[in-house]
Image 1: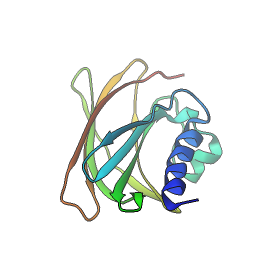
Image 2: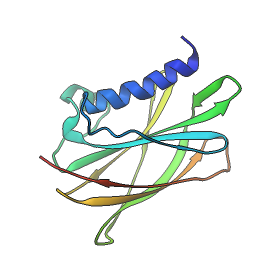
Image 3: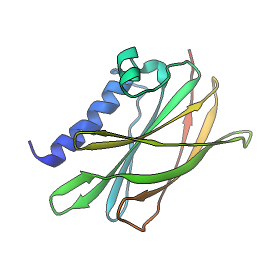
Image 4: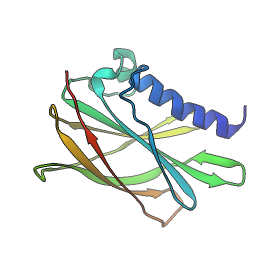
Length: 150
């Protein structure tokens, strides 16, 4: 198995593990000249207690987790890279929540995780600025997510 297949397999594995086979995991991607960014947000109740412990995530019906993976295009294909990520989530009432990311390395895979509190029916707009390691390029990502809680 090539390095790219292992890394992409890792990305798919964490998304699948985090969602536990649920259709609520909506993996999205944004392509840039030298990078591809994969991102998804899920309610933390979809994590098994074992997965939540492994990634130090608090399970709660009013908590969500944002997962970001940054891949660099190389001559050998895509390679996971570290990144500095800043951003916020803004609800329909223009209330902003700052996002703090922490990096998880799992073999060749690198993930950036952030948690936030959400309410039933709340729709959030996520605004992110991602600077991959070794690059001066800032990759802007904006997307919306509606939350449903148990």
